Image (tube, rainbow, N blue to C red):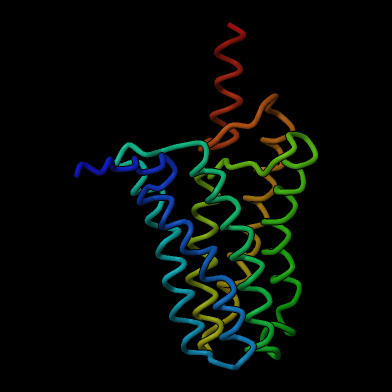
Length: 198
């Protein structure tokens, strides 16, 4: 008896599975935070940061870069940043209360570009600029430093960096006539426009 195999859906790729992990992990992180499991929260959050680091790399190495993957990554980023904010507030209320302004800056750097993209294009943008990648890495590292009792000033610098990255994303949304994925920087867009005008 010859059973025909169903083809694997095009969206079911290693990069998308790595990104999807963050979406699945978000409610688990909230559950851990609500029940006061600090260590479990930090470990799962570290796995989320690692998946964020690896999904784009996996997409490029396997040739599986896609518009769907970039959009999924943007959704996962927004969900995980909001989850981090709520979870950390539940687990470390004194620290987050003391650093509320910088926490708001980080959340705003994620939400405001998303809102701008929805207002202009009707969907999330997925630029993934160099500055966004740098800000995300800085925020992840300095968040752990702060939550584990280290100095808070690196987190404050990372929050400013996140705000700058969010500002660049909003500027890209204002400049572009249609949504694009994986834009390196606003400078790349501006220099490309100048070359076309020559």
